[in-house]
Image 1 (cartoon, one colour):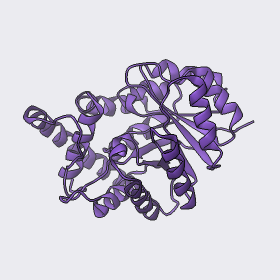
Image 2 (tube, rainbow, N blue to C red; image 1 turned 90 degrees about the vertical axis):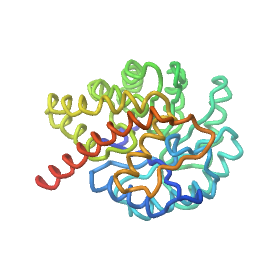
Image 3 (cartoon, one colour; image 1 turned 120 degrees about the vertical axis):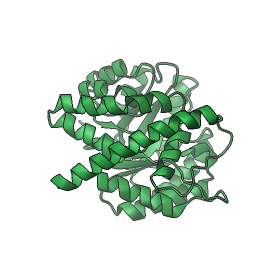
Image 4 (cartoon, rainbow, N blue to C red; image 1 turned 135 degrees about the horizontal axis):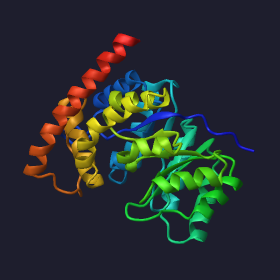
Length: 307
């Protein structure tokens, strides 16, 4: 019987920084990883949807992974995102990840029907990654069938983690934990707006972007039993989440602007196609970015004082 995979806390999904000539900004990416490690994150997921993964070439994805692995130096797990709509391309990418010594990978497989999904998952699993995280993404629905998730968990030893991003996420967290007797590691991503609810339901990790110090502090206060403090801090960032979580594209725009204003990324540039971030977005975001930066500085200072 599998034991629960030991990954608890904030697992940061890294936005991809671009230079003015549309190359990956290596310096910015390294600085973001260093900042997140200082804040106490439990791991990294890269590249993923918030990284604009489908706009990156395979070589760029490998470049990002290499940079992050080099910066992390084994301090925390680095989960390599192997999302591809084409199974053959996904296998090629996964093979290259494994060749680089990447032990943790994320599968994101398009769902057409249960049999096709099962076959695609098993085909990828034959490459024998050490740890598989499966992304259950459905921005407007219930996502993967519970029975399919449980079947894969019982049949594939490497499948240890599930990232649930469905509507609603809360009840699915609870169902999956119950159906697997708490042995399948469950994390939340897009439903970070329900972070406190998720923690109450027993979610093991959350995967947001940016605001490393604030998210880590909320998580640590909660698991230390300081629920009211965690709730109070979470309520402070709710306006930020309400704005940024309008749409994945708006989130990418917002957090890149935040990272740029923090001096971590050299530019807030994104790749097209992407939803417009217009003048009103910029106007409203500017106030929320100032709020987020003020809170991040406060959390970083308090961490320094008590460390």
